[in-house]
Length: 253
Image (tube, rainbow, N blue to C red):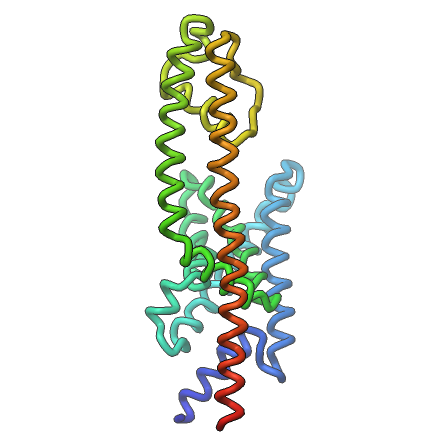
């Protein structure tokens, strides 16, 4: 391996916090930066503080964003496969943490600045949770077809529930179930078993229909959770087997 490759690898190790020499200090610095950014985001919503120290907090935000952009650029340049990193999970998180650099200059898009909170997700990377994230990613990929199927079924059931409750309750509550699109809110709250109580059936047919929707909703929520749980257990066994194989190969060498 050439010297340039070694320097790039060391830079990435320092940024990731895995370097035995400088890594711990960099990890602490990045954690502090992310937490400080989250604190500024919260303080900006306090009217009194925003009026008094709004300019200071905006300047701090520019500093935070500039540092995140600098780190993202270093990661892209030093990555062994830059394109692969850019479109990876952590690469997208790092990129979205930089998006506010442009949004700060666009007052009309102020609401979109909530993307800044995605910086907090990067704390997972610094807390050595990569193995857990890899296990979750493997599990979701393993049951992707089943999740897509249940997503389609959930959307179909959502529409059918809205249609059914509209026809059953519209005449009795024309102000609540005004249309099928308006009934989608009730269908979503019922299928997810949340039930806010702002819209509910009062007719016998509507109550029976709601009971059926609730039972179906329990299945729609429970089955995907069971699939993901089973896939997580399978992914854990898969990763352990891979680690054992790797250790076996090292012993052979």
